[in-house]
Image 1 (spheres, rainbow, N blue to C red):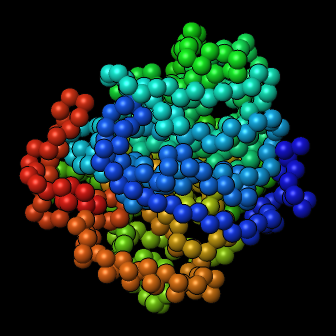
Image 2 (spheres, rainbow, N blue to C red; image 1 turned 90 degrees about the vertical axis):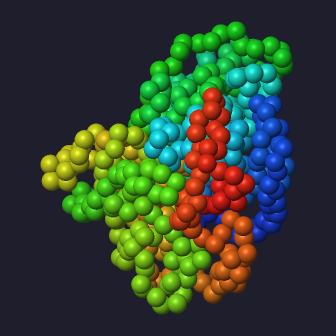
Image 3 (cartoon, rainbow, N blue to C red; image 1 turned 135 degrees about the vertical axis):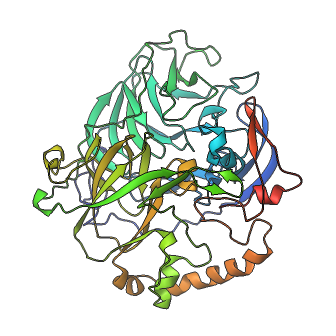
Length: 513
């Protein structure tokens, strides 16, 4: 029974009240290497950042599955991203665990360089991805090279597949010709099993699904389909796919059945019920509103897109993090770090995110999963739209798609003291300022955390900063731009981009705003 675990801990145990058996220390060395001549999955050479060997795994016995990524601007778009398997009970039985399955957009040029294309108003929409990779594999959609990923199923068996959208920009709909997905977890939250023929995956979202190999032995297309209007990103590969191969089928033949074409949208999935329930009284509903807006100020490099929450583009301080302020007893937090204090303990806090622009955003909260009380279009009114909210065990996860020109009402319980970032998971958007920080239960943090342990690293950073060719800091840490007087303009040149006003300024291009 996959619902059972050890020490009487099972799928119905409230893991926020009763901690699972843990406390095993696992030491893993992660070696990040910057290379300039890496052969990409589509066969084209590009610069990249590699972590150990391609495909390394870290396995920890705690609960469910996670994704880790570098939060140093769009660095994870250059390769600083991976999957963590954290085993635990499941809400449905399966025979074979196939592990994490990362699907993500892929760019032949460095993501930090492409940011300069994305932020300039004159360039219009963000750059197309070169392709979408499945477990790091893809064909070359514009030439020869690369290969389809092949995932082997055992006929007659049920397979657990941990789907992860680790993209910088592309959100897509996943479908497997001739098969359904039985969804058993959304992000970190086990749910009552739900059968779906397709799944929309916003950037940063994860699903645990069971795929039953109950069709004829053969090869089947696993497709990632983008919304046609481009509101969830665009790609040069119009038919991104991998191959699901039954054991006993040809290991070289392509699938012959293309299946029924999928009409992809940008709306998030609904209809999931967490196993461990959360129900709150609507009488507690007293929300704060966080408006999301887009501005186009003029910077040294030209007119740029600038995303804001509460009319502020977040600018974090690399050399003086919020926890160091707390260690110092310094409450003079700069307005630019977009900090909201949440002082009360173990209470439900409610937030209305009001998206004032036409594009959707996958909103991700660190430190919590949150209740999605409601999502809609137009402007939310707490006084007249309370009946549109669900307070009885609503969807709970840590990434939710807010629609363009719409609203998201969310709630989380203040049971985790710390500083928690909430941001859009589209790399370009958080790089342009779309983020906010929650300072939760500030008065307790010094007693709960050994804050002095971070001081050696803070001091090492301040020593490193003036010596680095990419620093001192001229940026927010989550978004990047150029220092005063530096001029870089990247313009489209076919499928690629070239520098128009840049001569021997590579360190400037790679600085982070």
